[in-house]
Image (cartoon, rainbow, N blue to C red):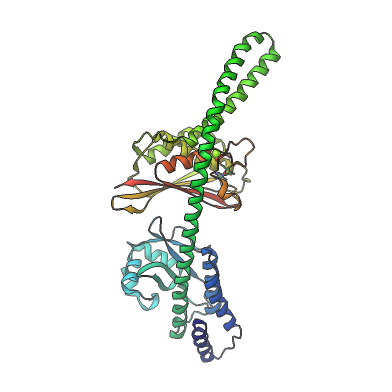
Length: 423
Ligand SMILES: Nc1ncnc2c1ncn2[C@@H]1O[C@H](COP(=O)(O)OP(=O)(O)O)[C@@H](O)[C@H]1O
Ligand SMILES: [Mg+2]
């Protein structure tokens, strides 16, 4: 139905302009097909942007979508600036929610002048001409910004009608893709929790079994070593044996802390301070590898109820992993670790999430490996234990929080930790 009405509209539009655009029908039906078939959100958005540009001869199309984690509207394009962010409190979003219709910048200078300086600067940088709210079920799920047309003529009413038709359709398709993404995310997490709980039980059992004989081996070696004091070769062998035993001991300890069933020492902890203390621990390594650390602390109140020692362990794992992921970077690639803390969305009336993220510019994680990184013993490093993330997952889980990972191979990785914070 849409295809017909859109094609008819387009045809009438181009008949007026006396232009022949034979592939227009194809373009439109392709757009409809892709909107209906693609469930991958970013693919869908990129496809949609490309088609809008193609159909209407526009250079600039930006799509912002509401991020359920933070309540902010974030840019989804590959082009544009990451710092372009809008919130529900901004006047622009406010205007769109109240008016529920398009805003054409050149025709409404008075409205634009009512926006904040930052919003105006953003519109200026985007060279935006047309703004349209993506509305699904009574809330603004996103916003589309269009630049001027490449021939610099004004948008005609027929063009606008066509665009709005496409935008409304896109809003539903994007919502559908978001819901699909959320659902598969939940299922993946459910499996992960289940898998890790089972592995945790296994690991705890094995660790207990190993620990006792290990203690016996260690003390026996130490006892026997007295006899070899005068033989340098044998002493060296003994030292080596002990260091191997130490290594096993460390793994066993890791296993135990991964599966430690209870034992949170809860107190008020200031996450910002905790991260700073952790950075001091890793300072030498960070300096040696010339890692540039950037802080994006958007939230003033970073105090939560948690186990400081265990959380410190988690942050240290994040920092060391980021560092290790960047140490193969060629000299021209930046080695940047961005640590950010921001307010998340509410969980219930008196609790909301605090989001802590670690974003590196390291080698990234292959798609086939990303589901495995939280598994105990999964490692891609020669001297890795594969326990850091498994332990971190356990700690965050016991805090009733959540940990997520996003990665682009060859570009970098972001770990996002959500911890509940009482208001
Ligand atoms: N920031 C990161 N960048 C790229 N890969 C990572 C990152 N963090 C973790 N990984 C991957 O996850 C694996 C497991 O990490 P972890 O549990 O800390 O164990 P380990 O560091 O001992 O390998 C790593 O070997 C690596 O392949
Ligand atoms: Mg690690």
